[in-house]
Image (cartoon, rainbow, N blue to C red):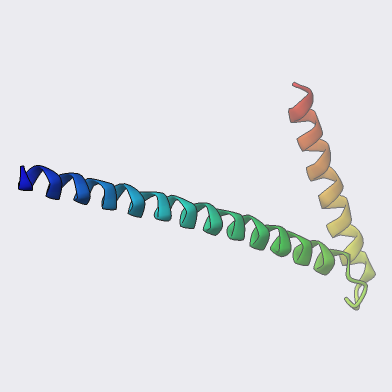
Length: 78
């Protein structure tokens, strides 16, 4: 009987630990998504930056972005 109670308590402890780890994973996933969004924003800001001495390069980057967006729209329409 003692062994049963001990195993039951251990099982409950493990379930609690599993729930804590699941919450931690969710928080880390959200943090990762936030960081990816920030990174994308920074890349976009860098792409659109006119601090580059070569405006032609910036125009080419914008054209590339427009082509990429057009490809995405085409894939969504399929």
